[in-house]
Length: 71
Image (cartoon, rainbow, N blue to C red):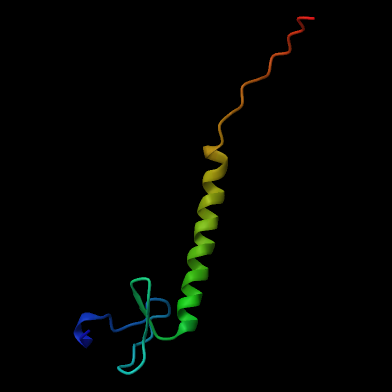
């Protein structure tokens, strides 16, 4: 992989990537493993926040139960 085909900055912190050391995971380039872990945690938190926001709206309303005594 050539230097011109990868981004020049870390996907998490925006720090310039050194020529000798860079970390590639899940289609993104990071300056260190710590930035990758931070990015994963941030994405998980956003996903949970989105799931919480959608949960009350997506919950179907239960119809009222009718009590019938046929004994």
